[in-house]
Image 1 (tube, rainbow, N blue to C red):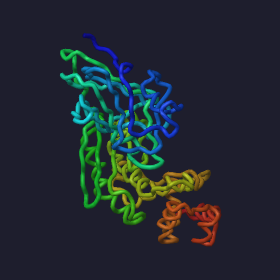
Image 2 (image 1 turned 90 degrees about the vertical axis):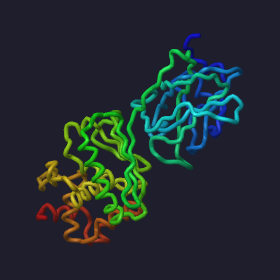
Image 3 (image 1 turned 45 degrees about the vertical axis):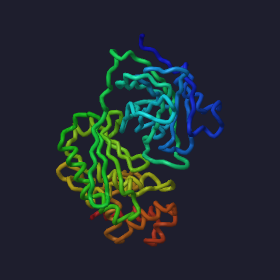
Image 4 (image 1 turned 120 degrees about the vertical axis):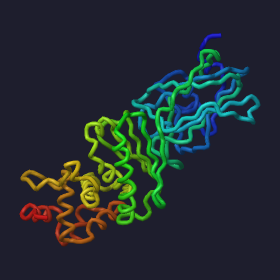
Length: 363
């Protein structure tokens, strides 16, 4: 017996099909067509759904590959389990994975496990996707799922790609995931401390209905400091934190994005300016990290976002107490209008306010 891909010997069934059918352009048949440029897609991710390969006779499968789809990373599998059965009723768990990641589109990853017994039926149950949401209008995609038969003496186990820790602070929960990045323990401790001390502050101030469970992922596949994704997931670039281990209030900025929960319509300068405003307001280690708001300089504009806009927002808040909460509420509820909000709250449009700021930018 030699190692071999046995996928073509099986018949495929899925519990949730593409709305256009199995043979559609993104139907389930594309999951095992041995082409990485096609994919299976569903429009309502359900963590209880499964994909099943059934063989006419038992196969000793001890490895599988998954290939990511060709577009949005948020649709990729993140958590899953492989189970097997001979009667289609009693199932045995063979492999389980948490917080996996695909570093690029149409990437194929192989996972090995020990399985000394042959089975006729194998199921892949994806229990979580990258954007951490479920339900209607949450898309799931997978380009390929292949099963590999492996002789028992040649079977190995693919090590877990991440360590996972759960931290609870009052009614809030943080899942901290490190994909074996080697980032200093002090970075992890600092990011967790920011969650413990600052997340509830931002929630209480701006959005009492914000998520109570969030995720931090130290992810070598992410490049660019940090970014917040759907479902309260923040991905951090370990290379950045190896070079800047004191810049821990990046977490405060990103948690504000979770609290903001904007569904669209708010300009980027408002979104990022408010997140840096919140970092300035409640940050724990800004001074240690040598992070501060820049003094006004000619050529700046309120639309520059981040720290430049944040300083303008601080100036506005001093003169109009409570306006940042109102701005956030307007953006979160989808009612923000650049031409209406500022005159309503200050009797001046934003250009006039910026001109006033330029004339007297003292905080």
